[in-house]
Length: 115
Image (cartoon, rainbow, N blue to C red):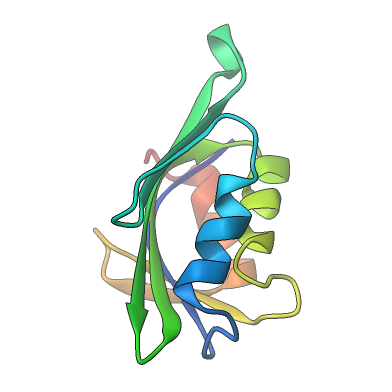
């Protein structure tokens, strides 16, 4: 499981807020609100997971995505695809630590994080 509380930035994102919202809404078990906040969950029992997120836009583009929660890496990859990954290069700002990481470093840190 990956554990995280991050802001995700594109370099910049090549998609709009609306495109990201549409992709997220297509995920199974997704609850998406018109203000851009959402909850996505899955699993059961010991393997239950949940991601709380929020989309932010600026100048007609997706600006950043706030993510908090834990999930299997496969679900994380499926969610990131909604933001143009893996074609889009992403940067992860760990909110509590105040550290910015590339994707590879973020994934290493998220496996050992306590959320």
